[in-house]
Image (cartoon, rainbow, N blue to C red; front, side, top):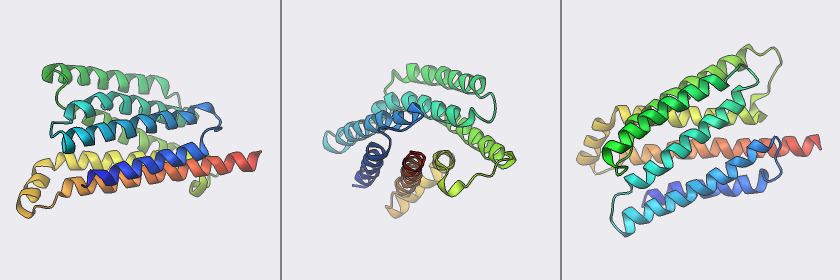
Amino acid sequence: MLFTIIIIIEFLCLFTALLTLTKAKPAWWKSFIAFMVFTCIIEVIAYRAYFVHHVSNHGIFNIYLPVEVLFVSFVLYKICQPYFKSGPVFIAGSVIFLIAYFIESFKSRFGEYSSAANNIASAFFIIMCCVYYYCLLRKEETVDIVIHPAFWIVSGCFFFYFGGTACNFFFTYLSSLNTKTFIPVRYIIFIILNFILYACWSYAFICKYKHKISSS
């Protein structure tokens, strides 16, 4: 099944985080470990629900959604904090997402995935990633982006949420391709997007670990 590829990718990212971030400083980097553990657990439960028990896993991913959005918001806030006063921006973005999420979820009794709330969060993340890139370009101090952990965290988020939003926008077209060709194009795209996200994150963890080793 195609979903097993995503689960493998996530476990590899978790394994990398465990190897590199257990003693990371500042301490908020360690939160990636807890998030990846939670992500892997949710993916396994959702996989078994759909492929083993043959029930919808939309409700499971709907539980995961606010954790994902709030975690990514927290990470981007920490990364953007040195460049501008990002706290009020991320608080406002999180509040708007939560309002949309609870309205949509209550309507479906938390049984369906809150896609509109997800789109709102994705659009917000794309904008904030672009703001980060702009601030990085304007920074007087030279930054070697090849080994800069924050850059790879943001880049992973940018490609994942930009690609995911594009897939949601063309959902009807991609579904018709699936019907005509029997090829799950949308799922294949999400496999690629997950690979990009977690490959960028894993590389960022390794860069962070190397910085720690060199500084000590």
